[in-house]
Image (cartoon, one colour):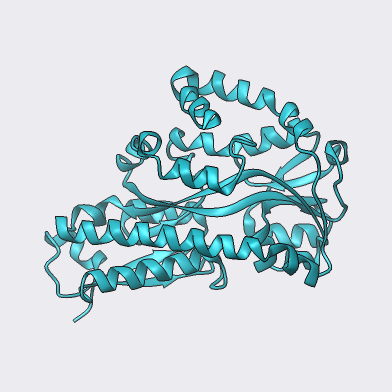
Length: 319
């Protein structure tokens, strides 16, 4: 008989023949996050011989990203994937992933996230808050999309750009000359449609999956942030698993990360053709002037978080 983890948390170690975990995310089922979630589910079921199963809740039906993390803390959901930018509001360790132009390519990101000398200490603060990171997915490279084309740094001047409510995203767009306008993700389409904003920053694969091209027919590929997307498990759920079950979860999590990244690269490889199909005008501005413009953002980060944290930033930049 299927028993949810939520019902078992108060009754000691998990001994049920089948454990059902709830995994939630905010993207549609066409998104690579859902593909990663499906891979986690399939792998965990195979590894456990059917003892552990996963129910996936997509499209934000369990709430927005902040709500998902808060639900994870109280154990009403077992696994979530949310941006590192949102995760950083629960743990400062993740703030560095919001720095602009930190990575040069997907290959850089994958190498860093698989480097235990960098990731081993990430998440310790989170664990104390009921959140345990178990894998790192990638949400894509964040660029600009909007009403008007961008060919150079100066074109951003005075533009109202929707950003996430992340202080370093905001600082970055201020440094680039824009007027950053933090809005919830669910309001992006309407904000662009009604001209509340001139454009937005985000992963271009999400731009396609959410059909933002209908209201913002221009994309500038600046790849200023590669979105790190941790997969978290509720610490309360983790503590109720035995060692064998934890091993299955970790192995399934890594398999999901490998698969999600592979799917992301396939989407990215086909992205230019997909944009052409939707009559999107694509530009590739010189990013070197942008790198120069955002240097004060790094100085602010170092002043806020100190040399110890900034040493990790320097280590990533040196890779």
